[in-house]
Image 1: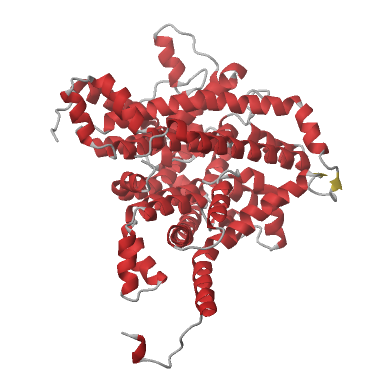
Image 2 (image 1 turned 90 degrees about the vertical axis):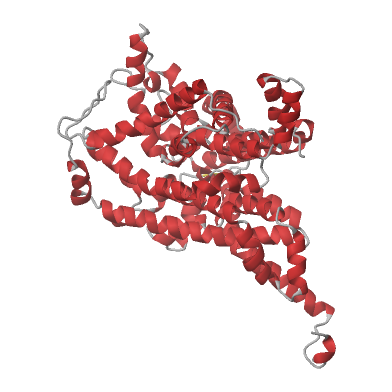
Length: 305
Length: 270
């Protein structure tokens, strides 16, 4: 169809075409941008505004400037909450990554019932923390839990797990790693399947053993998935809450109170909404900075084919 | 490619691991059919299994209504997220506009905002809109998903642009290209997003807890938490509720499983 067939039909000018294109862009973008602006970005700045006030959720807000931030930085509870969050991340991340990698390597082999096995490992991922916490509080019950019963068979007197300040965080880490193992496995499986097989064949011809191939081919080729797992796990790790809330409520005596639990307590238990908002902004900025550092630093170690 | 034989030791380890993973679920199912079950270190098969706990659940608590609420909200959130995310992903993958990189970075940054941070301002906002204790109040914050946009954009970037160009020459506009060329080719990623989106709605706890008041609007996690308070010693009822809450999610995963790994792989995360 050439233009001469319909000479008098609307021939849009440059401005008209640009307007039309702008409308197309908006039509694609606005259905997500409007809800995101209204229900994520606007309340975020709402929280920033609240963070500059003293507020108990009921009476009018009272301007305190950066007072909440200053107060938080001197509050030992803040330090405790960040300390527990780092503790959680340092325990959880190596456990879930090494476990997920081992599983992905194993379930990438030709095994009977492979699909079923993958589903079993993925089952905890789709289960609600309300259910998982109930199950783990039973497994790790100091008196009647099966973990301590099993330890007893070896003559080990099991700890008090989530009822003991020393063991509360390890309990949460263990349950979290168990729940998320399948998620890490799926991401790494996808990564493993993208590695060209001829690399392995060439290495085998050269006489490289299993460990050599793991360290010289698999792990370097897997760095993009590893990067994704670490970025997502760190974001989720800093925001850890559901499992803490459901398993220990942050206790005993604040031993497992993480930052988001502290935000929750400040808001709903102590009605110190201004400080809670300030703490949530501190957390957000920390996560943002950590993520930007990772994205900047990825060129040093991530291989993109 | 040579097909290697199964290493029996590896199989044994993986099967044992799966048994350890699965054991708590098995115990949950067994407890749910053991009337009067208590806590014990050595779970055993019930002497007279019965579905009494399930009957209790559906007769004496509004569990059927609770399931309907959860299904309705999860289906609505999933459909909305699939629509809004795929549209936005197309814009970031195929359309040129000023500030595209910045807008995309803002989308990604919203992934780093924990919902707990937004709870108070969001609640005030919903109160002002008169949406406290309504389905819409639960649903609105979940319409858009930055994770979904990210996942689908990565997948769409892998769709060869020559296909668009060919369609453009045939006179197709962006909506045609989007719906007839790009969308069908990112099917596995859409399946992946369906699983994650449904899961996030199905299991979400804090926001519904805060926004919902009426018993007849409550979702499964809220009802389960309620059961744990109400039937503190009746483990069979608590576990029956847990089993009921897992089954629909499991069904969705089994249905979509085939596509999930492929979907993650084609999103270029690799």
